[in-house]
Amino acid sequence: MRGWWRWTIGSGMTACAVCSTALPAQAPPSAELDVCELATSAEFQEAQGVDPRIGVIPDVPVLTDMSWGPHCDYAPGSIDLFTKEAELERVLTLTKAVKKRDPVQGLGQRAFFTVIYPGDQYRQRGLLAIFVGSRILTLSMDDQQDLPVEATRPKLEGLAKLALPRLK
Image (cartoon, rainbow, N blue to C red; front, side, top):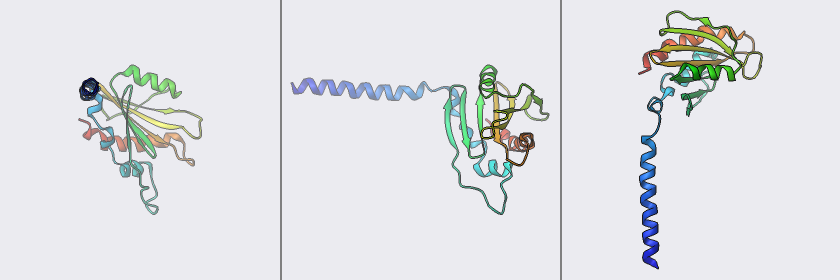
């Protein structure tokens, strides 16, 4: 009886070891890139315009692998990397993005600015999408209560100029 249990447990442990080592090999290619390394929390907050008298608020960016690719949450916004334009369009539809896409010159092959969650005082953000090769880098930033959401555009452009050279 004891030998049977040893064989069952031994096989189960082997199966667990084999399965657990096979899973990382099945991860999507986007998992290789940590988009949180494209900008520091301090750079993101400085881009948003944190009052230097207050100082940078301690914040640890959080990396999440989404269905479209890697996503990094910062206190004032986020960075995403899409591999398909259809996925970006799906997310823009889900976030009720403004249909108007303002072209942005000088970033990637092409770029545009839009507003997501328009009119929602708690979730409204500016979003900058930059097409780089076969990928699309998006940066979004919360608006500030006393400024229109369009004021995030130059801030996002400045942040993009820091992040793009770091994109491998």
